[in-house]
Length: 121
Length: 279
Image 1 (tube, each protein chain N blue to C red):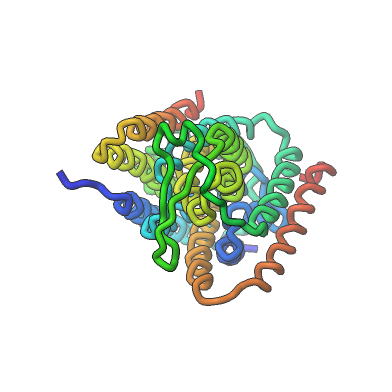
Image 2 (image 1 turned 90 degrees about the vertical axis):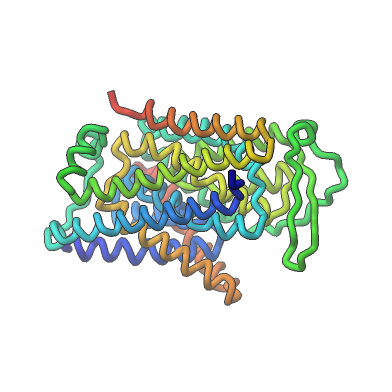
């Protein structure tokens, strides 16, 4: 089994950022094509309008709505963080640093936990 | 103004913020929030969301460069991240209950302290004292190579204090939508005695994870407005990239002083607006 190095963690992060930025850019361009010539109105903060739920996100993404594509890019960036934490856990485990592998797994679980408890009820 | 003109203006301003954020070491996120709030009259929570996103992107983009130099202490980073994440989620949940005026005041104060921290001269730490027992037990001590390829090892002190400060840094990151890099460096450098380069690069290693924890709450609480977030993210990211290139080429002392002054004025404005309730 090939050992992962710290550099692989960095490469995953860089790749994740590039993919995410590209998706966000595509969504952004699409948004401007659809709404670019409208008069700009400052969005007032409204909990109900901006709130993202899993269901409405996937629906909007399926319809290729510009805002959903941008959100998809953001989620790619979050998934990248999850992958890098798992990769770091593996990195530690392969160097027999089991305590730190365990710490990394804990960080991973906490990141998942943040996403789960943040879901609006 | 049309949407396209506004988006282009946001992009350009974010580019400049990212550029100078990288040059000064303050980071793009902490600079873009007051600009969005004061100049573009954007709701502070939406500005924080856009900032948090750009923080995640820039720190992830820079990580490889830091890791290549082997400055990053991954063990210390992961260990302290446990505290930072707890802080981040509490901070992000607090946004819902803390009045925007108070958030603005705290923001201004953190901005001023960040300028102060980033300006401070970092003295070398003599590695004569023995490491903190936790650091010994966990094998946190590290080593790195200087620019002259000199091998240097370092001890690590005050681990519990570092962990507590990191939890606070995480909390501010969640509450304000920033990376709180300056505070992280403070915990690593001043409290735990890591060399400055190790501190900045370990701080960068952690920022993405901390921001990701807050991002979950931000997304589902409605602090992310995609149409505002996209030009800010792309602008700050490209600006930070340019900044890191310029940093290698030029001496930017004058530019830094000018920029720090501007940011200081923005910080005072944020505090003033928070107190007078003009937000």
